Length: 450
Image 1 (cartoon, rainbow, N blue to C red):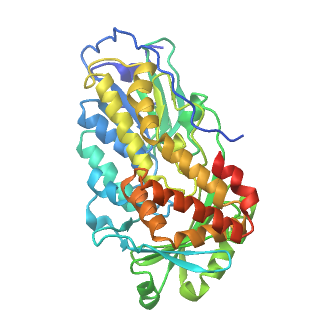
Image 2: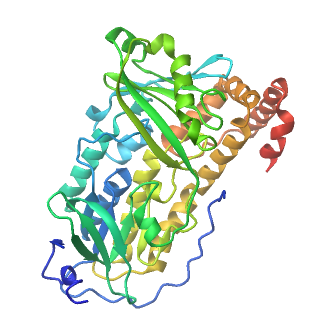
Image 3: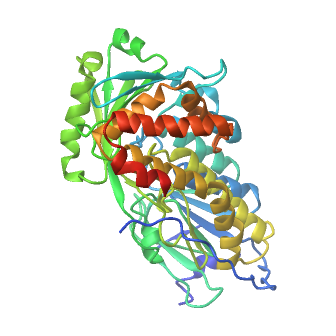
């Protein structure tokens, strides 16, 4: 046993070779008044996964004085399947350099099942836009910044997590690298940022969740065709492209990302992809597919997001919104909040922490800030994505400038925008009217009232 935990000694700082659910309320009992100090070293934390969630957590931890190890199995240049849209507030909040942005989208065009198009973006101010970038570029930047803050980057695949044998004994990370198939590292705390198929989550029996599948092709277009997408992104809805989500054409630096997603009919994902290509054919015809990508998207938070001294963030925790499918901002935000929570509870890495600390400083804060946003977008998806009739009603509503202003204010600044009561009542009545005109009100009145 002593040999197994040799990395835990203060003198060694580097690893050596060898059914549908909603947010559950968080009950935080009083933390132990006495948390033991750590003699001769700092608190050691392993962050598993080097995407926005993991890198943001690692940066917050290292900057706060915690000894931090960031595991990432993919090399920096490996593309990450993702639409790549991030809100305006993220650029400032996370100090994202503007040179990383491929496109400044100021116009979103949404197509109904019958191909009625509505331009979404009339209410944007001159300085407002949706930033489009490539995940491999963003992820590499965030990882490098975490390392600059003091995190130790380990390029390897985590294969398993051994749980502690007593209250304050370490967790052991087992992993492989290109040069060594058997390695281990002992740490005090683990942050799982390893995606929808999280091994960390499985190790702590965090429970399952429903996953959608997203399929995307990167298509290189001629300069003439790319000019059409200079500042334009497109969304297509209809049961031909997805029975429960939307399809997209998002512009990148020299190509477009064309994709779709579904949770109900995963086996038909290629049929839906063929349908989105057909609907966008006049604009992407002649393009060359340069990469094909597919990845799972969590549909709701996991039943357990903190257990022991292990916390889950990003996709591993299930932080992807319904309706919009957005995850990048919430991944980075959850990672940073978790990292700051660990720093605060450990008093800058000087003391051991426990489950109550993680729930109080991270989970309770997260839920208080974002649970209503997730619930609201879940409601919107249930109301408007259930049939083609309700999708037609959604597109009709999107033409309303009040809807556009409220939507963009909420998306760009990550707060539920508050409008005037009279306008909200008018919007509610317009929603009912649209559903009636589309012969779908009976199906969704219950969803609106719940």
